[in-house]
Image 1 (cartoon, rainbow, N blue to C red):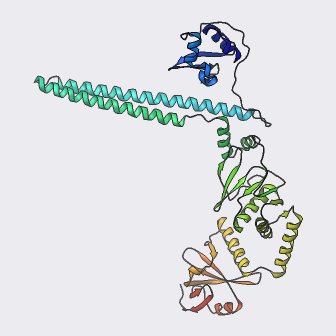
Image 2 (cartoon, rainbow, N blue to C red; image 1 turned 30 degrees about the vertical axis):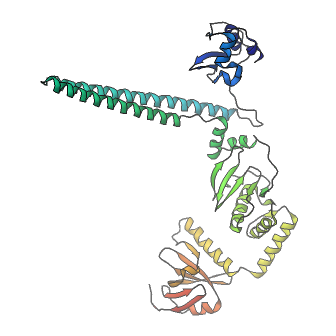
Image 3 (cartoon, rainbow, N blue to C red; image 1 turned 90 degrees about the horizontal axis):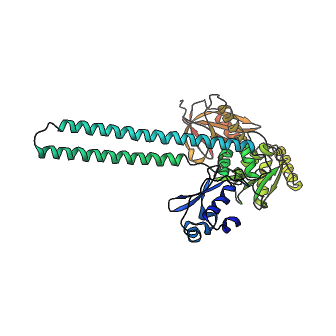
Length: 421
């Protein structure tokens, strides 16, 4: 830069650029500096004193470079930013894909041009054929009118062809836009490339955690994303998963959740965390979130790093074991077991919990008992409904046959019609 600013003539300026593998040329109303790799930039973007008006004011009218042999002292080479991770293989793949995309772009442009030329040739031949038909026509005025009609039609066709060609070029340009290095890494990480994700994650220092978070032994387990969908990948390498109505953010070391989440979301996040980090988990965040995690932990095979949380979890597990399953837990357990079998191909109707909106006459489908808790099954055309019931209701249901219509509410069986399906 000091040498360029000190140049006293165009020839001297070109020599300084040439020693650094650069050239200066006119383009449009300005000047462009180009590297041997083909990368270029406006001269004024390097320094405001390098704009064409500023240089011509200092050096006179622009003079292009003459051929000189110079000993190179430096040259620019595009390469990825320094990283603690070896990116050579990724960089080669990036350059290869850029080259392939550029080649596809060139082919598509050539095809569009050839398509335009073919249409123009066809339009010319059609206009010539029409004129040949008009030539024998008698009457100068009639021929003039017909010729004008053919010419107008031909010009309209040419304008339409040119407009279509410009639209094709715009579409090709939009599809052929080259992704910069970090945008390319984000796309690869979204597709599941762990190396690209690691490069993104090492790009920035991590900020202190001030939200609800789950971490562990950082075991990079395979397929831990089961049941979740990646929504996006940020430039910092943070994966966003959609879980219900909220987003779980995975920065490689921690799972982050927003301040207020439902119990179901916490259970889903802990299930993913066990698959990702292993059984030993650390929980940070609000007291409400920690208590939700303790409650969810009683259903999962995990251990909390916080002694107080682990003690609470164990106490709840022991208490549940002494009380046995609640009717609601028994219903949930049965529903999950049946739906799991359906997932592997067994011909079973989808099962779900009976709710008040299901009240009415429904076909009786049997009784089930899960760890001493009684369940009644009610069948609809597309689902099997599961309703926890007490011993008295079991006694009343024993008089029913499969298929009898029963009138039920959220509070239990009211009467049997004695009719069968």
